[in-house]
Length: 465
Figure 1: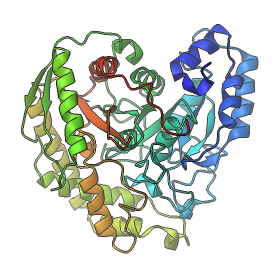
Figure 2 (figure 1 turned 30 degrees about the vertical axis):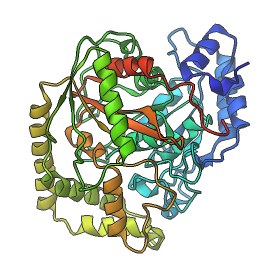
Figure 3 (figure 1 turned 120 degrees about the vertical axis):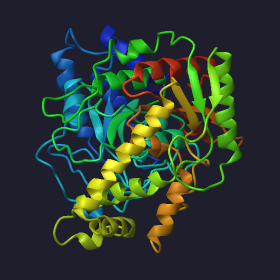
Figure 4 (figure 1 turned 135 degrees about the vertical axis):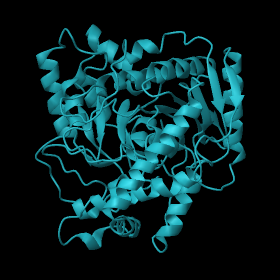
């Protein structure tokens, strides 16, 4: 008989709806599971159990969504009222917010109890999750290797069966990178699809929240929960014509798919496993009747320096509490110093230039329905393999070589998803990335669901599952 964590999030929600399970049954099951992958910084089991009792006693509302009663967890970058929120940093180790952000409030309103704050690197900056406030987040496929970052804890939790689905956030690949490392679906939505209320702290428009899940349909269902504009949003995506979950069951028709494998942001060799995954995904798309066409990289290498300027300024904007600056990691201090050296006019010019690069790429890609690349240049590195506290600049360059495609779609604002379509002979997951035109998550999800049907991965489970 299948254990509860064998079920998808939607299957769990359906059993809650039928009355065969209660939210308390699910939360009670998950709190007994042991975190051996560094998934959590701050567990909140007692709060989750209390919320599950409240939901059970209240009963399922008539208008509840399909994930009502299904547990989740909150990335430790999202302020959560009354719960320690460290932003992955020793400088904020004792920080307890008085107010939750919109992602937290939205999940609470959807009836999804949180089991805790998931692991993230300091300020969500690196593409690996090795904070000083928690053990490293590792992929359950090989616990000596990174879960990726910055949503490494969320991905590790879902991949190890500690929660069925979880939100991440992505400013340069931070959902898709850990999804690839952990053998999951990770979707960065289009810019403006999910509100950044109430702080609106990213003036560049690079970052957004998004779902991490074991299946495309679970990811779509969580996107339905998270999506939507708020009255104060500075920009927003047009409302979809139907639910994102329903989009998974639509025939997308014959699609025109552009593809390239040349790295965008770094001169680096691409591992054979990443190339093979990309080629196999191309073949699967052709089998499904789609047209796949090789194109040149749609973004010039000059865009990299512009992105780095914006990234450094964003780091500098996160000012540590007074007297704790010495607790920041060397990489954070190095990036912050770079950001503080940028003048206001220089930053404004960088944001404007980044938008020009985005416009040129969007125009070049307009004839295509989807764009296919690898997600990462290599399988997940070993813990510590990218980090270099003695030379933060070398650390940063190593990250670029590992993730030479993901940030391009943060610049353009296009939705992009990593799918677990390949495994190495050693059993390490390798993701493949598809991007779509802005606001076309429905089409992207329909194509991803097609690929999942012809190249299924649900029955793949890591050691110790």
